[in-house]
Length: 126
Ligand code: HEC
Ligand code: HEC
Ligand code: HEC
Image (tube, helix red, strand yellow):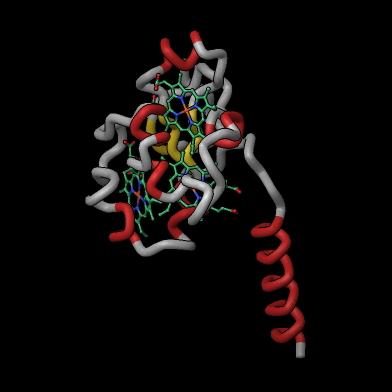
């Protein structure tokens, strides 16, 4: 019985975790993209925090790797004209598979000042 109860709370906890919108805090395994920091500051948007695990649990790796994204931090050249043209993030963020790329802050949610690549811990590296 105890086991069942623990399993139940784990499942409920996971469902709450999945349904809680969280666009603004990087977690372990998230990937910060900021090669284009200068243009992003000009456009007054923050760096990009790509929630890798959020996507990994929804899609097979091969949906993205390597046809859309090379599987190496920093190896991809992404910009807004590609996204608006349905490439890179825009393959899905096109208003059909997922929301359109009009909600800037959902992707540009990372305060500048973090190192590009996978987030290791909550450690800020200048
Ligand atoms: C689906 C996610 C997503 C959304 C939504 C999004 N962006 Fe981006 N944006 C990115 C990614 C990824 C990059 C590449 C970042 C890098 O590699 O430095 C980027 C890069 C940029 C850049 C720098 C490159 C360039 O194209 O000039 C600007 C400026 C920018 N975004 C502005 C915006 C604005 C303004 C909006 C809202 C209208 C927006 N973005 C919405 C993901 C997104
Ligand atoms: C929705 C698309 C998407 C899916 C699905 C996805 N990835 Fe990724 N992955 C990315 C993006 C975007 C990057 C960042 C590349 C960059 O920094 O230029 C990345 C980076 C990586 C990296 C290099 C960074 C790191 O963490 O070391 C590895 C390894 C990786 N992915 C493995 C996987 C595996 C394994 C799966 C399946 C379990 C997977 N990915 C599923 C989009 C995806
Ligand atoms: C293979 C399809 C696919 C690709 C490619 C993809 N996404 Fe997504 N993304 C999704 C789906 C589906 C959702 C969930 C949409 C929803 O909840 O309505 C999502 C949700 C998100 C969210 C919100 C996560 C949350 O906590 O709700 C962010 C941020 C995001 N994507 C950023 C990106 C960025 C940045 C890229 C490119 C580096 C990208 N995505 C590429 C399919 C994709």
